[in-house]
Image (tube, rainbow, N blue to C red; front, side, top):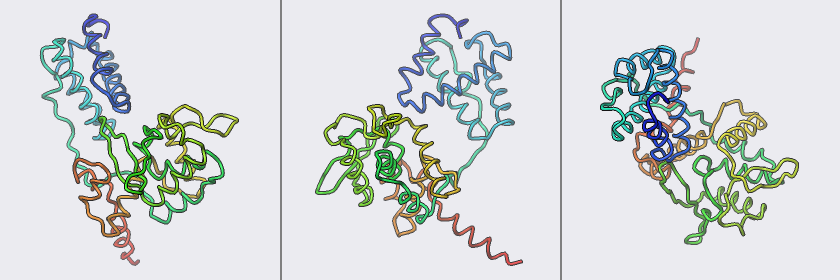
Length: 296
């Protein structure tokens, strides 16, 4: 990158600092661009301004052979977005990735591992809530993901019900009333850990080593994922669940109980019901029932 000159270097770093606001997207795109530039260096491409459509196409072709189609498409999207930024900054005249087509990939069912309602209840009930960590983890598992960015003041009372204000990708805020179980868990966590007086503090925090008490440090996403896996294994749940598993579990349970896809999309803050359908795993049960019809 240094061979492209100081102006190109500045524009390159501005792409990540000024153009991409979401930390997770910035990390993913940084990894994608870093891998592409490393590949370019191995091919003898001296500068980013020398990259052409042939190079991008060859990279995507090689990536498609060694990695999955979704990864290749995500990498291409990152490269295309970077060069769009360089074009508008007059670093390169055209976007070499604009004409490159990614691999064909259609998704009708998501891959997010889900739990059935009994397993979800088993997991929540298995947590020892006599500790600050237990109170935190139970409240967090009940609404994980965007919850990691919540502050204490994002849990509030409205119309005699507890509401939560979630901070989604792209700076979007999503407000909705709590399920009665979540309301109980949040009250127990906030009151039990003495957070009510710290309205501006982060809601979900790390646990201090040796103290067992909450710190001022917000809980990182990687730590939340590790906590979920640890809690699931302790509860005897073999399914390799992650941060999105509870969203998929909740949407599936809601639809099984007569909810509508449109309402589910609203509660999940999805812009399209097509996204919500990826979390609907009712067909998994149907498939299992049909497989069991094969009586041999």
